[in-house]
Length: 192
Image (cartoon, rainbow, N blue to C red; front, side, top):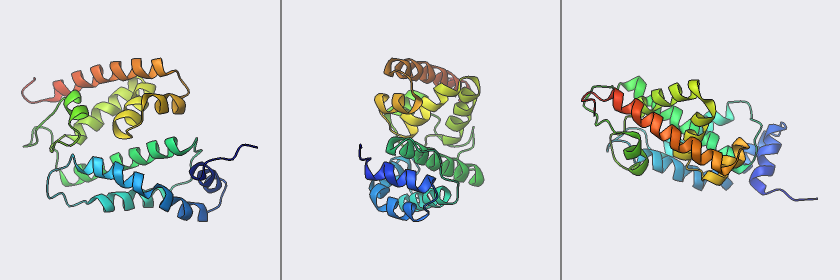
């Protein structure tokens, strides 16, 4: 009988109704969640009122207060956490009108966002809107972007979760980047 890694076993226990499993899970995943949150926060303006630890805590609260998913393993869990963190930041930006289109934010194209996730001023709201449009047209490509860009997953990890070949993920990733780049360019006030 194959022994499952502790994170996967705890995720399955949580899914199966063991509410204490999430409390045992957190110490095992905290460092990686903090790394994800730090990556997101590095893209925000200096002086942002939401701090890295607060982002991790808010993501934890949202996960605990939701019904446990059908976790496919630790990679899937981190992808979901990344999506939750993205939602938190986008909700925060929308609620405070911090990233209005046409405002004083520096709009960036998708390649710049991918290369410079540490650059301040990426318009998360515009990126989120474009990603929603892509997901409405092609849900799998939307998932690929979420997992690769927001979750920091590799091609191989993304392929495992989506149950497709690595070549399919690479193709979807290239097409999605091209499509999003065009969408974000159209939203720029200067049309570049």
